[in-house]
Structures are given as structure tokens and as C-alpha cells.
Length: 463
Image (tube, rainbow, N blue to C red):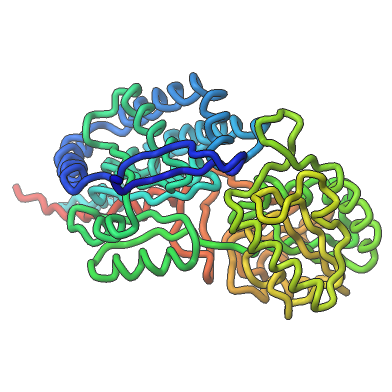
């Protein structure tokens, strides 16, 4: 049998996609084509590059619902939500296109008689994007579109769980009229992925995935003088102060914890609640969680689909069992949900009380539909617990006091801090992490900087 990808749908364990791995000659061809195409692309005006991105967006929107259902079949997100990923992809792409001209403009220094001085931002060359399955379009577009806008070529290696997403990117760019060779999607083995990172024709690696995967990428890249952007894991906390709008906090936090079956690097995995409102918050949170509908994600009434695979669900079940054996109590038990089945990807949501930081469920990334809720005395205790983590991607506070939120935000070790919302990327803001959540930056004006290099021009005039 030819080595390649076999994508198993979490809906029913059927084989959804089979694709052979790219051959050595196909990889060579893609890397050579990228190197050749980028020479002309870097001379194309930014406005023309942005116009191509707009056509790319329109190509995606024309197939929005079809792409949404296809996404559901690949990774299990309920079909009622899946098409919104296309909407968000378009929003991010258009935002970055709108920021490109100003972000990539020359930096002119104050004039000195007899001299012209300026700095240009030049493209790196070829950007290798390694994308995950959980938000397969959104995580990829964060690097792909800014890289192209900055004048680079892009090679995309997508997850074996979502190979069709890579193909849809390629089709949309073809429809948009992107010059041949500037974008290529390759289905690669792990070994070929590492070889690509080591290849001198690759100039930057943008990786989204696990901490373990980030270390593999970094080791491969360390043999060369190229940079990497690493968006890795999270154990994102939320804090509900005693002055919070509880109805709003509960609604947001149930969604932040359980949307996409909790399979989000910036999903809420631990909640700290001020003692004065703890009982009311827990009561309402439990009631709202029990209203979720676990089931076949192709059913438009389903709000919670299966996890991506059975092994992922069993990992979360293991965390929950360990926590309850250590004294935690299940306020919402996954077995309350009819479709919950041990040994399958279908896992009901779990809400744990009586948790502490001796339990893995409060310190180790779960990446599933489970959340622990702890009572705290005050802001200081909340901040201390929120910072007690190897991760630092996002953190959130619910309060009516913006000044208090800012004080808390300044004390939290995180890449993004929210007040009264969570689990969201604003493409106008920098997306970044600290500690084991990775390094580098995507989105916003700052997202172009890792994809370019500064080149200084110091011109002396002679008469």
C-alpha cells in the first residue's frame, strides 16, 4: 500500500479521506517553484497582493456552507457552527490586507543634508506553515495571508485529520489568480516535514500545535539560522469577580469552555470565582452546561459534537477520574448525556468542583470538554492561581470595574488578556503567547514583522 494519509471521521469512524504522501520529486518541485515565483511576487505592489487576497476571500465565501459541512465530517464540530470558520477566515484575511500597506511601508528617517536614509521590510522568502486540525482554517490563515501580503511564497502542510482544508486553500488561491508556485499544499509525513524545515529553501516556519510538536520543530530549525513562530498549548484561566454580571459571565464561560468540545488552545480550562458569588455562579453554570446537546454533529440541533478521536476523549476521561479520586466532585457528570460513550469520541461535558492545583485537570492541558471551578478569596489569590501554570496564551476576568481589570491584566503572565469575554481572536490585536504557549506573533500590524527582514538604505548624495 502506498504510504499516506487516512482520515477517520469522528462522527462514525468511517474512512473519509485517503491521500498519498507527496513524493520526493513533488516536494522538490514545490520548493523550487516557491523559490522561483517569489522573485517576481516581491516586486508586485502591496495593493495588487491585497486585491488577490480579496479574490481568495470571495472564493471561500462562495463555498461557505459546503466547506462547513466538510469540516464537520473531518473533525466533528457541529454543522450549525462550522461555516462560521469561513466567515472568520475572511474577516482575518481582509483585516490583514487592510493593514498591509501601512505595516510594510518604508520607514523614513528625519532628513540630514546630503543623505537619504530609510528602512525597507523585505520578504524572508518561503514560509512553511504547519497547521493543526482543531481550527484548520483560522490557524492557517493567520500565517498564510500575511506571508503572501509581505511578498513571500508559502508551502502548507496541514494536519492528517483535515487534509481537505489544505486542498481548499489551494483551490481558492488558484481561483484568485495567485501566480503559479507561490502557494503549494503538500501532504507530508512527519519525517518529510522535518526535512522540509531543514531545507535551505525554507526561510521561516509557522507552527501551530502541541508543546511536544513545537520542540520537534525547534530542534529541526536549530540546525539553521531561521526563525520559527510557535503557537502551542494553553491552560487558559478565567476569574469572576464579585461585581461581575453573572448571567453574562456564565453564558460566555460555558461557551468558552465547551465550544468545539473544548478543543481550543485558548479555550477556558479553569475558572476562579470570588467567594461572594461562587454558589450562584456554580448553580447557573451547571444549569447552562446541562442544556448542551451532545450528538451527531451533522444534526443542526447538536451543540456539542464528538472529540476528534477516541484517544483524545479517553485522555480527558482519565483526568476526570484522577480528579474525583483525589477528592473533586462532579457537578456535571459526562454520563448525564445520553450520547456519551466510553471508548468513543463522544464525551459529555464535565464540571468539577473541589479541585486544586495538585490535580492534573487544573495544571495540564485537557483540550476537551472539562473545566474545574475553584473558589477564591480576592483578586490577589486569583492572580496567583492564574499565573500558576506552565502556559500563558490568554486569560480573562469578568468585572464591571475596568480599572481593576487593568490591574489584574498587568499582573497576569499571558499573551492576551480579556475583560468580559474569552476564546476570541481580534485580528487587529497581536496574537502571541508566553511560557510554554510558544513564541512569536501573528495578526495585527505586528504580525508582518516575523515574516520580513529589515534592510537599511544609507545613501550619501554627491554633487
